[in-house]
Amino acid sequence: MLIKRISDLDDPALGDYSRLTDVALRRVSEPAGGLYIAESTKVITRALAAGHRPRSVLLQEQWLPDVEPLLAGFPDLPVFVGDSALLERLTGYHLHRGALAAMHRPALPDPRELLRTATRVVVLEDIVDHTNVGAIVRNCAALGADAILVTPRCADPLYRRSVRVSMGTIFQVPWTRIDPWPEGMSMLREHGFVTAALALSDTSISLGQLSADLPDRLALILGSEGDGLSRRTIADSDLVVRIPMKGGVDSLNVAAASAVALWATQAEHR
Image (cartoon, rainbow, N blue to C red; front, side):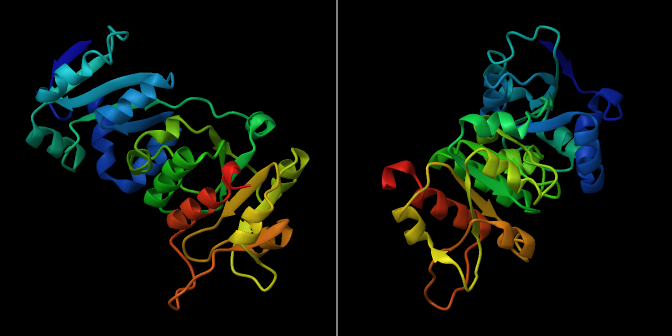
């Protein structure tokens, strides 16, 4: 590693981290620059294990012993080191997990590659909250989804907050974007998937009914936080599925709903 103790916050080499203080720049610069930010040694470890390549690392001095073994294979990697107050001035927030890494984004696979071998797929339609995206990804890893498909207007799963909330499990579950959508639903059917839209509808079946007669290949489709799934997606899906509610509650948060639906449709529930 090339350990560089920070002396000048205006150093252009620190630009990957200083631009994080502006949400608008973050959304533009990370995808356009082919980078994402991994936060915490746990997330960095999982990113490296998945074969992702770091461009630089930023950390507090006390985290050097934890990070050095992870980066042994990158002798020319710049590692910027500073105290907590200095790093907070640079990034605009407190690095309570001690370390950030600017990582090169891997090329996303063709969705057909993922669908060939998958049996449980989760589709995220226009989910805009990065925390929800990260939580859904973690649920997918924990509860056995084989792949995640993200529609064009959905939040970026490699956004810093999404990666952090997922606890780095975004590097475990294969994912890619499906575009166009909902036209891409035909691709799911071509690969033998039954499409199940989670929504409220007069024609919906309960999640219990779905789990009692699970198809071999199932795609669970989750909609945006405010409006839910689009009318066209609901109309084009093979099934509309509801989670029965009590207490006058009409629905769950989308991340919570994903956990319930994934648990109920695990293969062992046949």
